[in-house]
Image 1: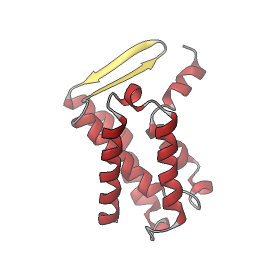
Image 2: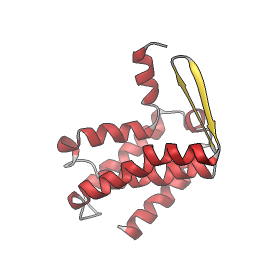
Image 3: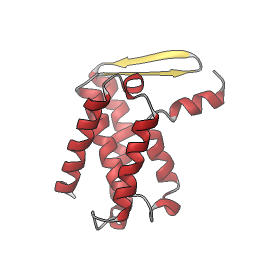
Length: 146
């Protein structure tokens, strides 16, 4: 695998879409509710790590890496999900004072587009219905908490 394929492989994961939106937040805050997306990413990431399938598989430079075990997941989740949410919450929460605006709808559409154009079973190792259920639960929790 060359370096371009490694970057394209990383785009399979929604967390890297989040990083892209965070980096370009200066341009995207008018259109996307980053707090909502980071919260959904946090809840779905925690579910994938600690409930089902409890393993993380990725390929880099043609080598397959598989992580299992709670200690490794705590590190991966801390870096890729918890710290990202904490950063967005602390830095950009003031941009999103209203839950019911067009930015939330656009954010929801981004998640749906991601799910339609990627093979969820192949990427995350669970069915689309299961991940969609977790997504719906995290969306309900977002409206309750924020």
